[in-house]
Length: 522
Image 1 (cartoon, rainbow, N blue to C red):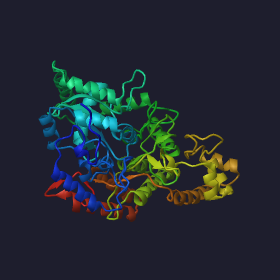
Image 2 (image 1 turned 60 degrees about the vertical axis):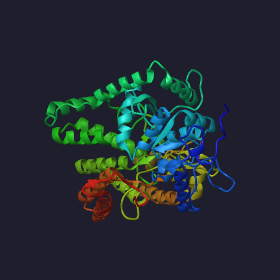
Image 3 (image 1 turned 30 degrees about the vertical axis):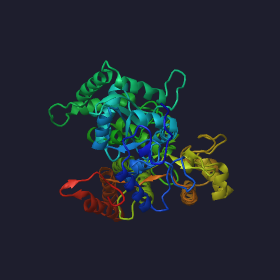
Image 4 (image 1 turned 120 degrees about the vertical axis):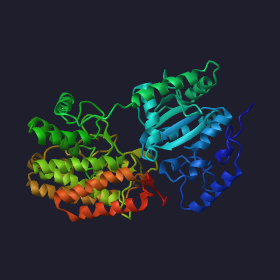
């Protein structure tokens, strides 16, 4: 039997549920309401400028789901319809979980979910479900346990295959589209899992039962105990001593994630014990993180994590919750030590959030993407945040650019592909000595240059911003602004916390219960 050609509206693709005229009409009305300003994200475009394929995700508000609304894959959002369809058609469910600013989610979309051959296989043999982990952390947590039980690790994009009863029988994270040597690709894996699901020996059901048992053991909880006693806190401190990186701070090895909650533990442990070694671990980590490329030296705020062990080369997405937690770390370090460098970083983080991550009504957006569009039209990770020496000269003039290059380590060889990630290369005192200028003048030059670079960078095509307003993440950032207002005696920070809290209370506390997210008035 020949496979029918892919056609407009994924609802009519081969293997999909019977064409639903009512749903097709809703999609057409949604398309009309989005207007001409809506730009479909897909490489499959019609001559009239609209996308060749449209699926049910077009009716959603999540930026991540909308990114996939024009894949040739017949995606469903999470819900009963998908699993009822799977049961009726006797098919497994392919569950794909990610989020809008996830670099490897974009890679898998481009390689696999935009590929028409892979779409035909998915549509013919599976019911496909997309979930935004930031909207549905409950679903993400359940199936992440399954993936970790199977593979010993997790991450996003998360790929899980389920029975129509929602039980997982196989899972993983990112898969390349095609076979690569001994590693099988996504298309081959789909064909094998299709056969396993329909095998007469019940392999899929047995695997689902075993994985479900393992998940239940992983999530089992014992009776609630008392608060941890001193010996447990001492053991935690010993753990951090044992795995501490004395060169770069944080934990040994790479990648390095922002040490937000461990830092807070170490600072408070020092307050209780007076252990100077513990305080030095916390301070050294805070200094190293703020000097590295993982910190946005131009606009403030931390990127998601460092891919190396020196905090130099980040994964360039920025998350609201990371910056909320880290702002409090730097505030507490300032309160303990009185060192103004920690106050400066905390204020810098909050300024970034106010400028770049705050909705008009006062609440906070969720994240910005790792990828941005270069002048040649290609999507490139980190382009927006990186520089060439020529760009610095053009924005700052050669004399001031020379100061910036010395301070931020722009040397003879690029440190990120053919561009430079700005990072504090050496101490302020040492750079001032090399440049033969007072430290105060050096820092005035750097602050002026940061503003000029921010203005120039703002003219670039910015990374996608996920403008979901998440209750939990807003709670963290409201706390950070409120603590800054208290610790620094700054009513402006307190006012920002009040504005955001008022929005959350007015829009996300409904009938005595909290809603998870808010987007486009819903």
